[in-house]
Image (tube, helix red, strand yellow):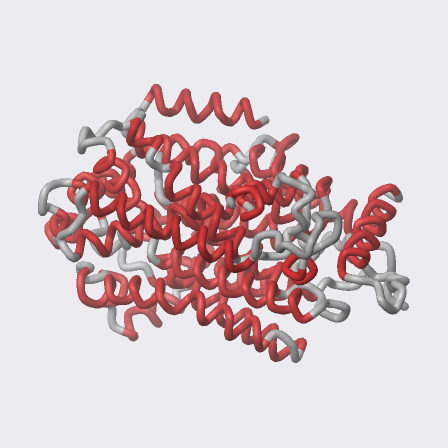
Length: 122
Length: 391
């Protein structure tokens, strides 16, 4: 079970990176389904390539693999934060920030696809 | 249907927890070598001549990585769980991709069609690499469809979003190349399709650059593996003369076509056959849901679907060509692989086909001059709801 649970790490990283890329999925359950599918695909793809490279370098122990995957996830969180800056002091929350204007289909009001949005993370 | 599919997969796992032939002879075996202590080079040893040591290590690496997390206990539930997650992701991408681009009705119908394919559902329990490969195919094509979305009324940020979709499409195409040899053919087909679409529509150069950017790192990794690490591929060791001779043998053409027809027929029962269902959905929604038609009464072909159609057709042609020149016994090759090739291509062909069921926006949107992009999207949604209510 621990082994299978570890797959949540690349899936989470895939989700965060998919969010950070700000693709025009729109909103709703269909967008949520697409993002979930792409998150799994991206997560598994990057994770397998990472493990292959670590193997080539002779560094494929569980500690280093976990460290690299955590770094990848953290990088995604920072990329996401950069894509969607947190609410600034001049905004009262009722209107869109500049970042939301730049990505109109991904407002904060709907929390489905945007569960990993920086507004909720930070 | 999803519950039934889960039951079928669970039944397959209980009957054969280590998967079917290729799973334990190729993918899981190599994963064990990779996960072992300094034994990974055995996974590409030429001594495994009968089990394709030249295949890329994408799927096996992920299984090995997960076994390493579990303390190298080589639990058979790991490859089975990974196969299930790959299948789930494929289903989600098909439903979500078509749902986002053509509306939830088409998306959900596409999901039902995919689950109606016995071969596809059965392959999940087999733990082969064809489901992961199919996932990367359909993900790349879906993102390409998003990248080629109509930009006529798009803001600069929306155009950048399309470029980012093309980059991610390139990343998934590279993952396909790192999963199976067919992935390299897919990369070539996709590149050709995008270039052709750019030439035909004189748009999409930005998407082409984005795709190449996303493709490059993963493709370099896949090519480095093929050139410096993998064992020699027997298919490329044939002389050109031998290949031409096989291509000129028309009995081979007939054999391939007859097996293809037979395998297509056995994709499902006649009343729930994925090809019949897809054709029915395409026919109904192409005719009924298109709000505007050309002067000759025909529904306009959505440009978004063009690169997908070209890539899918090219892939099928490449598979046909690979069968023609295969150095192995043709009958054996067809009997053991045709089902799996159809499984690889089914989600991608489904998305490519149903993307042409145009619920596209053809009426001009009446926006106030200073309307922000949110208002534009609200109008788009209203239009979509209006179009859907007409069905």
